Image (cartoon, rainbow, N blue to C red; front, top):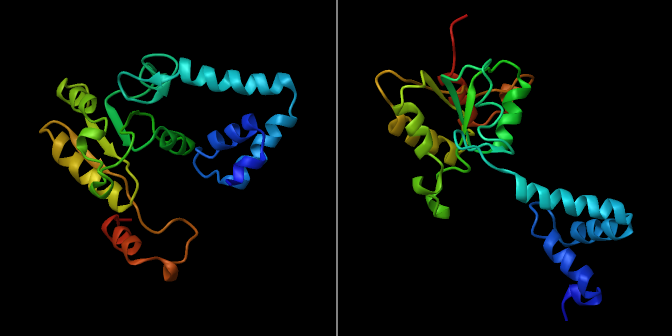
Length: 202
C-alpha cells in the first residue's frame, strides 16, 4: 500500500505532480495540495490559469535564449543597452542576480545549463550556436563569461573561451574569490586560489 493511497485520487494526483517541482518533497507537496484545496475557487482558477499562460505564452528569445513573452526580449530590443557587450550566464535566473548590481548595461546570452560529462551533458546540449552566430556577425566587442565558479561552470567557461575566441572579440571571465564581509580564515582553497588569480592593482 503506497503512502498516497489514503488520499482521494484527485488529491493523490495533485500531490504527485507537486512532488515533481524542485525542492518539493512529499510533506511539502501535501501541504501545498491542501492549501490549494482550501483556497477559493477563484484563487485555484487563477493559479491554474497562470500555469497555463506561463506554458502557452512564454518562449525563448531568438537572440539570447532568455525566457520572454516578446521576441526579441526586452534586453535585446532595448536601444539604451550596449548591444556589443554580451554576458553569458547558465540560467535565466542568473540575469536577475546580475541586474541587482545595477552596474551592467550590456545584454545577455543564456546557455540553459553547463557542461557535465558525468551527467551526459555535452556542448550539443547547451545553447551555444546562436552565440557563435552573434559573434561571427561582427556585432559583439566583448563576451563576459559569467558561469558559476563550480567545476561544471569553470569547464563551460574554458570550453566557450576556445569556441568563441576571435581576433576582434575580447573574452573575459567574471572575478571570483573572497566575498565581501567574509573571513579569509574560513575560505576554501579554490576560493583563495581564485581570489589570488583575480587580484588587481590599487
